[in-house]
Image (tube, rainbow, N blue to C red; front, side, top):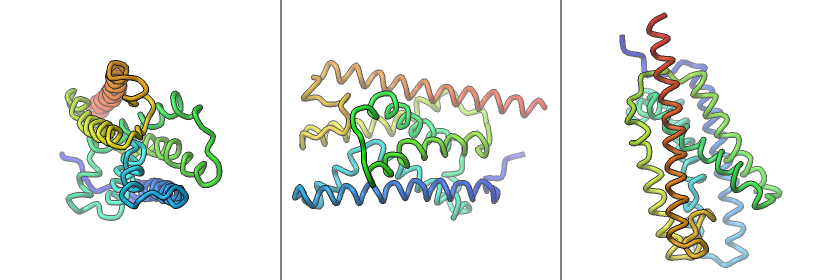
Length: 220
């Protein structure tokens, strides 16, 4: 019997909280970015491009939109798509990489203060944890295809193209490990392959767990 795609009230409430958490972080970060732009004399186009040059920002936008639509409009086509196990799993892969890379590579490179600290906490720590809790407690565990992690690479690949084009045109690379000017093409290629491996590893881990739990539920 097919599973009802409409989430229950508990899941919808949790998704609403998670979506608003991410949205709050995005708004705070946008305020900080605009404030910085005012003092540096950046154009509106420069501010928007810089804001959207970060994988963290784009992924949190996807996460917030998915959670809010899935919670507030679950019967719509977009809401149904947002609540699919494969969609929720893909989003967890993306935001998990955000949190892991930040903690292991980027957190030690700066000391955010004030509103920037709040944006940092919400976008790099709170949303990954909330997404993980959502997946564990509420997302139905299904036999996701083994090819799913490969398909999920599409979004990071598109981001990489955008980030390199933006960096090449402006000189601003969102992350130090893709800085072609500082590292050169060879080192950036190695870093990109390592990141691809990380996305695949996390994706395969979630797929394996989901399939095993699905089989266990089916046999019980």
